[in-house]
Length: 223
Image (cartoon, rainbow, N blue to C red; front, side):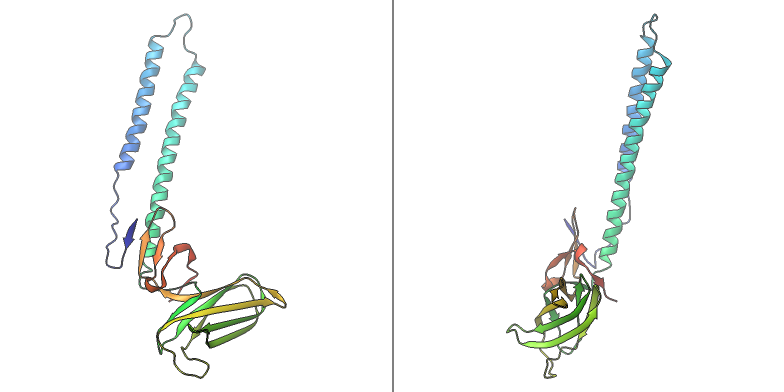
């Protein structure tokens, strides 16, 4: 795995070594096949010469094999290009604020902190609480008749007594209901992207103190 950080240049130079190798393999395959075919024609039994249909069939085989090789080569190039484009797009997130599923928020004193919910079904009521490490309730937000989707809100960092809380991590809890039925919901929080860790599978987003997540867990990119 490799790490992309904001100071690392992105190399846009592409090499054609693989393309050259693939083309060489295809040409060698054709040349060998044609040599064998010529030898077969030269040494054929005069009383039972090779038929035109057999010749056509063998030529079709080499064309099919060559076509498959070319298709595989194109598919590989396409896959590599997608990976490069994804790397470039993800590297542009470094330093940006994003919204992810999280049961905690990181708050800086006297600044607004964004948080949110991902609601999987319509709900008649949603209740969100922000609490400290002692489970003291600092902020409550209630919503009525809300449709499924992703919603973000801002907390001014003040408790229920209108006093500013200190910098630190705080808990988010959310309960959603459709009348008496519980509705599946996730709490979301705002974090900052520190770096991108590229891997063969889903790239990893390094969030510093907030930990690491997969790129597929990003719910929103904030402006």
